[in-house]
Image (cartoon, rainbow over all chains, first blue to last red; front, side, top):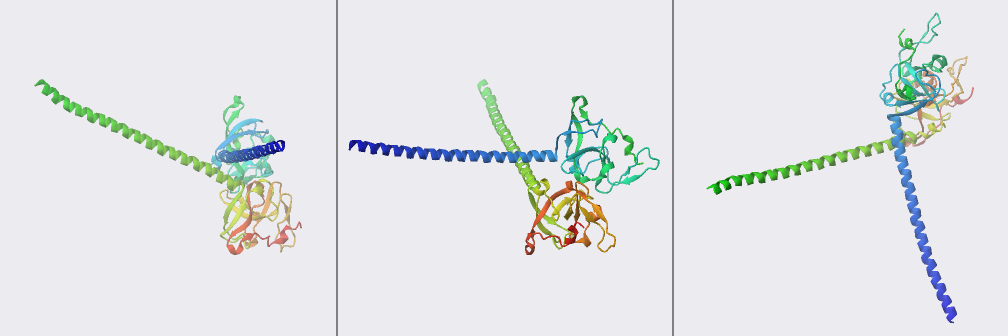
Length: 197
Length: 202
């Protein structure tokens, strides 16, 4: 009798302990889950917030760009790091002689980096300098004529024609790396191409 | 006598001292009030500017990466989209390169970078486009170059499109229109092109 009584009491105590323990565990889980969920949402919220601000800063102000390819030598070598600003594009202040970054007209996923030779309405000399009969082209409205500084090794408007102004992403104006070439970028080595022949 | 003189001198001195002290105190009080007000106003201004920039950036990214409401003007997409219709545009297809034939897209105009155009995609890169008039006897074709699309308005008689300025680079496309909101009589997804024959690879 006493044995069963104490057994029952022991069971009861065990039940109560388990109930209390279970409740405690549940509330701990709920708090932890809520805490973790809350922290996750806060983290995601902050990431989206600062991601948007960073994206707008890169798109409207400027950023650091690494160029690759030989088409702008000697002004910009392969693997140089330059500083690009995106304000000129939005205020339509791109001028002849500027080096611009633009979306490639033949591949929308990649960017190209060339110098602006002519704006809309300009007369561009399209024949080779060795030709006897010179041929000209006029740049249509809303387009620009781009050429790389390394004329022998550059796929540019001489190949795919003038590109619409809307493809221009930004203007490169300062070189950061390598340090031996730190500073503002030089003018075009092919100076004669600017003359309105 | 001297005592009286002293008192006579000291009283106004005391009074002057008192006034000076009061002035100093009120001056300090005024200065500190100004500083607090200025700091408060400056602080509030900076906070306001900060919030504006923050939410402006988020709104801009939402419009550019997700989509937004657009009002179209012009007769070049009739009867699908009339003048002053309000439509819903999404910008995700462009970033995932999911624009297909028959989609109505918004793009930057190739002849005027400040304005947008709204046309239907007739051909993607590599497609053969029938460029001659249907009444011509000898048909002429053009191939759309890589990275370009061929756009035409639904209202062929009154539309300046790729038949005029040629294929445009894919990079000019801003978004895809897929739903009309206004007028309510025409609420819903947009219809297919009324000029169906132009899609056939002739």
